Length: 122
Image (cartoon, rainbow, N blue to C red; front, side, top):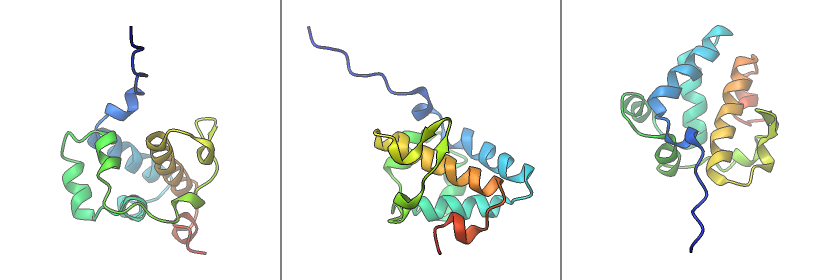
């Protein structure tokens, strides 16, 4: 009897539309804007703001959101640190790592880091 495939984390099936407002809300609580959240997401994924608007009104799940990202930022590997008690650079699952990279960037935004630092520009 063949072993069952490992079960995917439930977070992968959540829609981008369900988490996007949470990112904006987290940033807004610390005085940051939806525009800054969009800049962070577009920097990481290559989506345009228009594409983000469409995705935030769709049922696209996070697995699909990351799989269809137009251009993953080549500097994403520079994102380091801890999210949910786990070092993002040490995550083995590529999809989970991408998700945690985005979480980390939103955390940095909410902590008041300048955009240049968040976007790894020097």
